[in-house]
Length: 102
Image 1 (cartoon, one colour):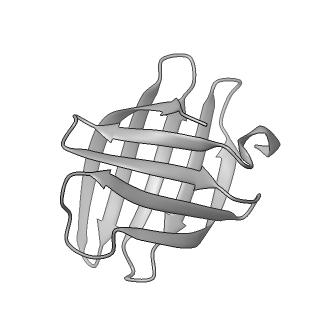
Image 2: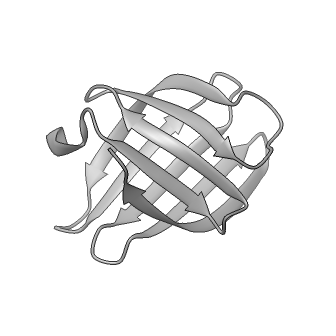
């Protein structure tokens, strides 16, 4: 995960929503909505946790100040992104793609 620090990723959910995700440290992530419209904040910095699942798969999770929680599975062998979002008593699965942009 140390290789992530300072890097910016693009999380692309079917071109409907696109976020820039920057890992500012080994515990803080800054995200920004760059395409699409989603109610609530468009940019925020939050603490995150991560686990290395395998050589090519990483699990990253954070909770926004609003209480909306995200659990992300990144598969570096395919560029596939699977995000599980939780808000109050609802959960959603958002498939997408990711890539390093900076």
